[in-house]
Structures are given as structure tokens and as C-alpha cells.
Length: 603
Image (tube, rainbow, N blue to C red):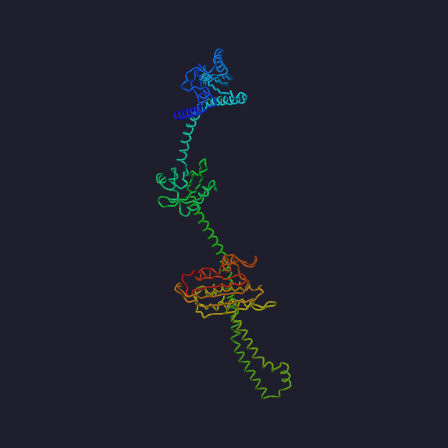
């Protein structure tokens, strides 16, 4: 406080000195100070010029020496001071005498000077030579009034400064006390805060850190103040942090928040929420950043655990739904396989009897026709009754058509046997384990079952099937499951072509791809390609997803290709893919290892 008072007094002295120098530099006015007895105590250059006295000659003398003898006799000097003392001011004009005895008409102003208690301390006198400018009396009077006003204002200002100084001393004492209390309070909050708080220079240096921030990052306060925030920021988060700070320095952001990672002293990573604001100087120049850091590592770990748990639950739910649908589908296919196998068995027995006796019937028919031929040769003229009966039954037609009839019956029975064999091959009810099978038989079985949808019908030209089968060895596989795959893909191809107005062709190609250096097993490749309208990229991405279908509601379950994918990939360790573009058809490519390796037994 004493230093503040001393500084204020020095400031006042400096102002007083400035005012003195200002007065002494005025040459148009004689400005000097009188004590209460009327003795001259100050003298300016204007007084020396106007009155002709030097400061060394006049200071200490009574100011009545400037008056004429008449004025002294009339006691005008005493009256001026009395009036100035009583009224605070005296103003008048009259003759005054210079040092060389010459006279001039002077405009005189005498002002009483008092202290704060109202005690008279002296007089300020201003004199100007207006002899040559008598006619400008009004202007001179106005200038004198202005000067007097300035003196009064200066006096009032001095009083006001003294009053304000006293008030300011008291105020500063109160403010200093409040500041000390506030600083102690803020220091306590800063040091005991539950979050990390810091001041950071614009170049990244730590200027001030609290204990909580040190605990979060695992460094001591001294180690922090000797480093930069860039040194402990995770590399993946540094660019975003620096960019946001750059935006704040450029004036584009007032503050920002982000989640970032710090690298602790022991090398571990801690997650934190960072909130940053920028403090600027009065000029607008950036000063430092205020950063608040909250440790959210536990929350992040909980979120990650929850995310993993949610993902696991979603995956489990997806698997459950898929498994449920597959079980239903498998049960249906199992029931269908049993039904097909039963029907094939029931048909196979009677057709076996028929097919087995057709040869004997042919022999019998041939013998009877030969015997008839011999009768006709030896008895060319039969009895009228026999001749009539031969004409009625058209014996010659029977002789010519009977072999054809037997051949047609044999062909039909053979066709029925082929259908029964295809049904048995497709159902594979007795082949639930890995067996070596002919892939082509499974494809032919599926085509035979779907033959009714391939053949031409009324107002429909049918679908052409082009088979380009390569020479394949038998493949170790689950034949029944693989036949389902062929059936699903062929059914989709047929449905894609049924309403297609252009050329309808299904091309089936098989070949063996020998193992290479990257493959441990040779692959059987089955390609089923149609000339339909094709599929978009979005459809291809979801083609093998469970329950995904492009068919109208109620027309499909969306499980066929999903189950086919699982049969090929999981059950046989192979691959299935689809190549398609809108308007260019679709090609399904199935890759099956020639020899199984660590396969799953469930679909």
C-alpha cells in the first residue's frame, strides 16, 4: 500500500512539474504566484517579457512595485488581494509600470489559492499587455476567463485526484484482500479438482498443471512443465488436436472438445475428454490455452465391453435364427427325402416286375407271330370264320405293330426306372456320411426333377440347357446336401428366365482344377450360368445373407442360397460365388475340394 501511495504522489509531482513547465513557457502572459503577503514567489517568461524583470530581480519583492504611484496611494494592491482573498478572484484593468519605468495597459487577474481545508495559501496572478489591443477587450477578457477556468479545473482536478487517491487506497486494500482470498480459493479448486486442469502455451509447452492431470498421465509436475502436450499425445489423435488448436488461433473456433488418448509414462494408454479454450491479450493476440482433461478410460473400456457383448449377442441371435431356419429347412428336406425315397422304392418294385417281364413277353410275342406266320403259310385258305376274325382284328397291323408296342413299353419302363434312380440319387436318404460320388449324377438328377419346368409349354418356348461336363473323378462329399445346392441354384436360374423375354439358356460347365503351390488339394469346379436379367452390386453383397430375397412377399424364404453357402463352405470346405451384372445374366461358381479336410458335419 505504501508503495502505491508513493507512486501516486510521484505521479502528482510529475504532473505538477509538467504544469510548472507549461506556465513558465508561456510568453504572452505574465503568470506568477504571490504568497499571502503579496510577495512574488514564482515568475514565468511571459512576466519577464511583459514587466521587464528577471526572476532573480523580482522573486521575494512585493507585487505593488508593478503599480503606479496613484494606484499605490489608492491602495489598489491591497484591495486586489483583499478582494481575491474574500471573493477568490480579482479581475481588472489598469496601468502598470515596467522595470524601466514605462507604463502599459494591463489586464490583471488575481486568484486566491486555498488548500483542502479552505485555508489561504497564496495567489496566482496573470497579467497581459493589452495596450495595443485595447480594441480587442472582449477577446482578451474571454481568454482570461478561459485561463481562469483552466486554473479552477486544475485545482478541482487536483482535489479530485487526492480524493480518488484516498478512495483508491482503501479500494485497493479491499481488492487485495479479496484477491488473496480468491487466489487461495482458486488454488484450492485447481489443486483439488477431480479433473485435470492446465495452462498450455501456444507452442504446446505446459505452463501450469494440477495434480489430477499429473495422476492421469503418470508424470510428475516437474516432468510435465519440462515437456509439451505433443510428447504424450497418442499419434493417431495428434493431428486432430493440432488442427482444432490451429482453428482457435485463427479465430475460427472459440473452444472445442474431443476424445483423445494420452500415452502414460509407463507406456499404457489412457482415454480422456479434452475441453480447450483460448485466452487472448487485450490486443487480441493469443496468450495461452486452458485445457480441462477428464479420464474416461473406464467408460471407454465399459463401452468396448458393451460393444463386444452386443456384437456377440447379435451374432448369436443371427446364428440362432439361421440355425432355426436351417433346422426347419433341413427337417423339410429330410421329410421330402424320405418321401421321395419311399415313393421311388414303391415305384421301383412294380416297375422292376414290368421291366423284367418285358423281355419274356417279347420272346412270347415273337414265337406266337412266327407260329401265326407258319399257319398262314401252310393254310393259305382259312375257314370263313377265321378269315372274318382276321379282318376284324386287322391281323396284319397287329403283326407289324406288336414289336413296336413292346419296344415302346420297354422304353417307357426304362424312363420310369431312370426317374426312380434320379429320385433316389437326389434324396440320397441312405448317404448321410461322406462318400465318393459322381457329381454329374447329382446334376442330372436335379435336371430330371426340374424337367417339367424346362420343357416348352403353351405360349412358352422353354429353357435350353447346355451341358459341358468335363472329366471328373469321384468326389468325397455329402451327396444329399450337395444335390440341394444344385437344386437351389438351378431353381433360381429357372425363375430368373421364366419371365425373361430374351434368349433362355442355362449353361452347366464342370472341370477339374489341379492343385497349385498355394493350394493343398485339387478342386472340382461347377459353373451354372443363366442368360437372365442379372443382379445389381447391392443385391450381390447380400445374396448369401439369411432371409434375403428379391422375390415378392410369400414367394420365397430367402434361405436357399444361405443354406447352399453353408453347405459348400462349412460342410465341404469349398467356395461359392456369384458373378453378375444387370442385363448380363448370373453365373454361380462352386468350388469343392476333391478330398475333404477338417469338414463340419452339420448344416
